[in-house]
Each structure stands twice: as C-alpha cells, then as structure tokens.
Image 1 (cartoon, rainbow over the protein chains, first blue to last red):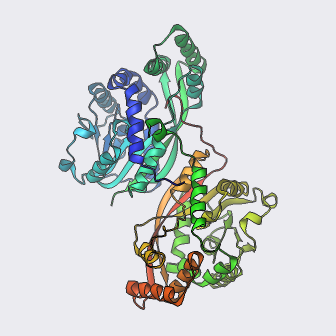
Image 2 (image 1 turned 90 degrees about the vertical axis):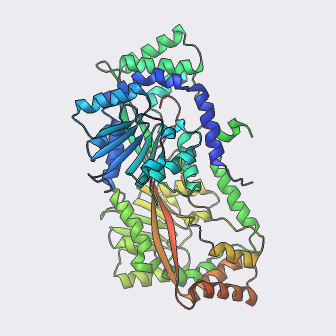
Image 3 (image 1 turned 120 degrees about the vertical axis):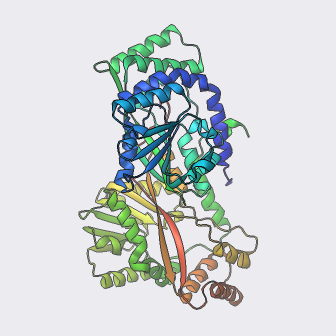
Length: 268
Length: 290
C-alpha cells in the first residue's frame, strides 16, 4: 500500500524528540569543545563546501554570504577568505566572540554578526540581499524547517545550501556503541532531502568528506556531554572514553573522518 | 501515528515494489517489445531535440565531475534511439548500447550514421537477459534513463549495473515539473482511475541511500520537440496499455494536442535528475558523534 509521506510532520516529530535531549543548555555546555574542534580542524568541512561551489564554477569574489547559526565560523571563515563579505547569524555570545577572534587572527575584516537566532531575524529587511544563504549542521534548531527554508530563499538572490552529517566517523561509532548510546533512528539528512523535493525546491546533492581534529581534552568533554544527554556519567564511562580517546590520539590531537551531505539549489 | 513511527526508516524497496504493483493493477495489458518499435520514431525525435540537448547536458554534468573522460568505455542500459549513444560516442572511447527493440536499434544506427559516430556496438537483448559474468567491470560508466521503472526487482538490476562497471553508475530520472497537460488528458480518457506512477526521482535516491550508496545529484533542464503525428503515436501506445484506444479516444487525444500546440510541433520543457555514484564507496549509518 503506497502512502503519501508527510515529511514536514516527520521532521517536526524527529526534531522535537531530539531537542528534548539536546537542550539549549546542552549546546551552551558544548560551546567550548565545539569551538575548539572547528578551529583545530581549520574549518575543514566549511572549506570543503567552499571547494564545492568553486568547482561548480559558481563562486564569485563579489558574493555576500549569509551563514545561519555560524557557531565559531566553520563556514564563515573559509568563505570570508574568498568573497567580499560574510554575515553570520549567531546568537550565542561565546560563539560569536570565538568567531571574531579567529577572524582577527586571520586578518579578516569583512565579517559582521547579527546577534540573533535566525527565527528572530526580520527577513523583510534583507530581501534578496545575499548571493548564498547557508545553514550547516544547525537544522535541528528549526522544527518548522520548511517555513525557515522559505525565509532563507526570500533573502537569497542566488543560492541556498543546507548541510548535515550523514555518516559518523567510524572511530566515534565504535565508542558510542561500546557506551550503549543509541541516538535513535531519525535521519535528518534524508528527511530534509525529501521535504525539499516535496516542496519543489529539488536541490542538487553532494557528499563531502571532512576531518575533525580536536585536543584530547576537547574530545573527552564532547563524549562525556553526549553520554550525559542520555544518562548520568559513571566512572566506567569516563574510563572508557579516556582510554578510547588516548588510544586514538596522535601528538595530543584526536582526529576523525566523517561525511556530510550538502543540499543546494538556485533560488527562483 | 506515534513520533517513533514517523521517524522510523522507510522500507524504500517495498515502497518501490508497491508502486510498481499499483501501476500493474490498473494496466489493461503489459508493455511489449512492439510498443517500443512503434515508439522509435517519436522517441528519436524527442531525444534529438536541440542537437541531443538532453544527452549533451547529462554528458557535461558527468564530465565536469570527472565521471566520464575521452578514455571512458560506457554501457547504456535501454538505449532507446541512442539517448546517450550519440552524444557520448562523440566524446568517449566506446559506447555499448543494450536495446532489445528492433525499431529503436534501427534508430540508433540511423542517428549514429548521421552524427558520424561508429565507436559503438549494440547488444540486442533486454537488460535482465544479459549474463553479467561476460561484462564484469568491462566499463567505466553504466548509465540508464527512463528505464528503471520497468524493474520491479530494482536493487537486483542496480547491482547488476554496478557489476558491469569499474568506475561509476548513473541513473537519469525524470522530475515532476507540475505540467497539467498529462493529468488533464488522462482524466478525460480514464475518468477517476488514478494516474499511473512511473517513479524515478527522488525515489531512486532514497533507495540508493538506504542501500548504502552515496549518490550525487545535479538537476538539468531540457526541451523536447515532437510533431503532432509523433505525439499522437506516443499517446496511442501509452493509452493502449490502460484502455482500448477507440476512434473516440484518438479524437480526444487529437483535440487536446491541437488545443495545446495547434498544428505546430509540440514543445515540452522537462527536468531530470542526474544521479551518479561510485559503487565501491559505501555509507555507514549515521550513529555516534556527528
């Protein structure tokens, strides 16, 4: 029996369940280790997304890019090195400070920050203002994703791009399995892929490889926080996490490789 | 419905089979090779539009991403009138066309002669009858378009396409463009019988993804131009699958075509998804720390 799938409802159900575990408080606690990872990885996934647009022959020096939920700048920094202007939407003060400090170290002065959530931004003020609107690794913030995508399209005069991991690094899979953490079956990437196709956006699709590098301390903290999303951390967990990270670290750095799905389309 | 059932993985293979069965259920008769002989001329005219615009766009897309090169040996499954044979043979080392319908094979030869290409051969069989052992890894690219809807055992056939290549696989699938002509004509002839589904994209992406592949997708736009006579021939075959094509049915088709394009060629804008992947690279499920 063929049934029509309501992808918007499926998305909302998955996100609501996920956000029950990943509260704002959780992400505030993760701010430091996440920033550490992005900077230590030299914005690897952002650079690979930039490469994609370059390879397609689309990237232009005079572009103005909007990076939604920029965090410490994984997308903003590599794009700011290649285009004339990047605006980052980032409400978390610590993330925004990390981004500006990183930009300063790199001698970049073409970045500005809108210190709000994307939902708080009045799109009427920015209609058709950007050549590329991108939201990477932050789709979980929108339970009403299609409305938010429509707002992204409204402020874009060129392209929209959504990116999300669709394959976890094998090293971390191994560890989470040993810890008995089951992240559930909700697949954000394929749900948003279908939702966009149903809505008529019909995105191009790419898969990019990336490498995450972080300090041993940052890696340990991130896994501990992950476990605490599901249950209190016990002594055995801590021991297992420390052992795993130490065993996989080289010269004090923990490095893993993953794959990210990139959905991008030209705005009509 | 619980939130668990909303977010649980979908059995896309089952979904594909159900869609195939639903179409079969409303069919008056099954497709036969003769239908494709009858369709050869209109199909050829459509594919030749704007100097093989469709095939050329697919080639450019794949070439930009390094999937085909002048050294490539290409296998086209269900080549029709030379959909990819002609535009690809102009630029690659060799193209092998698998095409069972004699009328279509004649069109390939005719179109190839006109285009001045001779670096191709034709296997006069249906894809399912090909002994894959004789073709294992002989090609750099296996490609197909407007064919996969014929395979109920979709992943078996996809796997066989993968076995023939040491490089990439590509499926080019139609994407709905919201044109109402087909649905309105169907309603006039078939009443409330549901319009049959010929699922290609994005269903094929879901299938490949679920089955561990990592497909890339580019959307292309193209035009198809056909004379009113060829359009009528196409619709006559199509509706004969679902009902008896009486003089009255033919008249409905003629009238619809006339009100759409008058006596001029019928011009349609289409959109397709070019989906390619490397069969040797597999996806692990997303569990763990993303």
